[in-house]
Length: 111
Image (cartoon, rainbow, N blue to C red; front, side, top):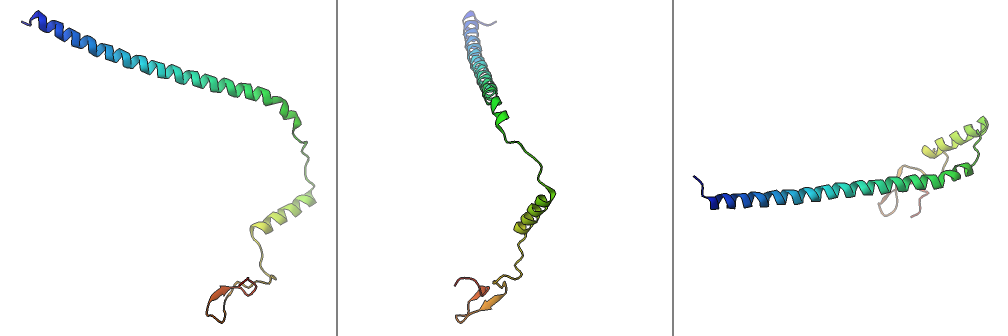
């Protein structure tokens, strides 16, 4: 049979363990509450900001369709910018030997 003194000691150990667990739980609940509060502040802040910016929607420019002739010219320009044609340019893309034996691209390039 266990002595009464041992039971008291075991009870005190168990109480200390439970108190530590309660302290940890309080800390975790505080972190969750704090995270929720931050989320609410951010959400409300963005809602308030969106409400303040709402009148600016009326200030955007009126958009109208580009005439087909202008749209075709724009498409042609964009295509040319993506894939430039070097035909007829003053640069040749063939390696050329100069007097020093260096192989450089093109005659029109700066030395």
